[in-house]
Amino acid sequence: MAILKVARLGHPVLRTPAGQVPTEAVGQADFQRLIDNMVVTMREYDGVGLAAVQVHESLQVAVLEVAENPRYPGKAALPLSVLINPTIRPLGDETEEDWEGCLSIPEIRGLVPRYKRLRVIALDREGNDLDFVAEGFHARVIQHEVDHLRGHVYLDRMPDLSTLTYLTELSRYWANR
Ligand code: NI
Image (cartoon, rainbow, N blue to C red; front, side):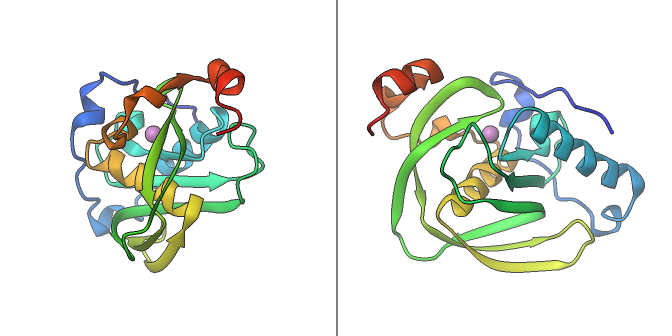
């Protein structure tokens, strides 16, 4: 397995909608290797999610996992999951604001409103159908990753860019928000 290079903001791959993964490709060794490499890359950089476009592969696949993550203290753990060709639909219009960061936009956080509840339809890494409801932080991470697959980054979702902050300043000036 290999730690992959992460594309940073400005690389066109982050602004290009990713292509669907053909069903017959899911079981192939090179695609499975891509998923394994995405997982080790996400863990190496303490991410809670990683989309294939972030490792220069314009395919609709994302991995997510929240262990005890030092970058996101106090967040509920999420088991490792793989979403292939995901589609999401908000359940209700309730949103909530929270801090987000992105491995493609290092050292920065911003407050981003996201839907609280979603219905998620996707394939897992074996090609099985997934259809589930995600809430709260789980729903936030999925919205962030699906945005990547459509060529968006979280900055595009911020109604107020004045909350953008470096991590050091976040802990210094925004700790009580
Ligand atoms: Ni990101």
